[in-house]
Length: 328
Image 1 (cartoon, rainbow, N blue to C red):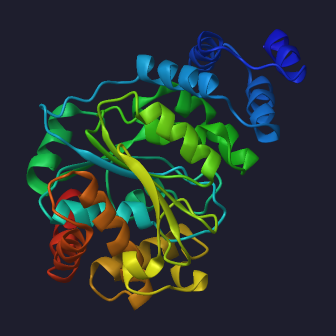
Image 2: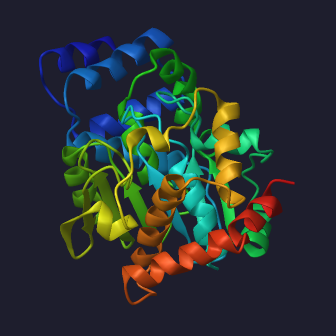
């Protein structure tokens, strides 16, 4: 690692193969915690290259515990995190709303490293049992249209670096990797990113896959449709900027979509919304993200149709029913 660090400290970048080798070695515990922390810190001081991100992704996918969902076309809704906005668990809630419409979801998530409550934190708090057993995951997909894939159970390297990331408490390149290494290889992906440079990188990498994808970035710094301002939307076929009024009927205030200060508060907000007792702003943000995810599948004619399907899933309590089926 010393040789690699000196190389990087000279403002050089890694090739795809070099980056892949480093991540493979991290997963094998070749390096100590200080060496790994130093390596991660390099990417806090400069942007990651496409080649480096490709190498890190390739290593994680090569080592991952495979998931076999019997050929089902599943969706993932995931944000990179690290936007520093401390919103409630919008992506995870949207997954349950999408599941409530009858679409299949394989949600890939992890504990929060730079946030109070990541998707794994809130799912665990709500009583979900993490698992990587294919039969159990398939039963959840069949019964509830959704299963949850806790990243460290599928990616050895993420388990190794988890405590280091938590101790650092800041956004790292592992935030960027999460959405690209779902072991179920979803056919449809709604990916939220925290800046436009990341949107460009994701667009390049996702264009090389067979996924239908939509990349979203709130232009005021959110890794999701926040409705606090305009949203950049990038798909397989092009890109555009959409207003909060178009996506959610009107704008919302940042304070209205706060995620609370503890995991317990985050879980309480989560359940309040799923029970149909959320505020107008909370509901609107979740519905907008859910609608964009549904549109990504190509099964519906327009955004408004998708929005109404999301409304029906939430108001009929179908989304809540899906949660109750997996958190038993």
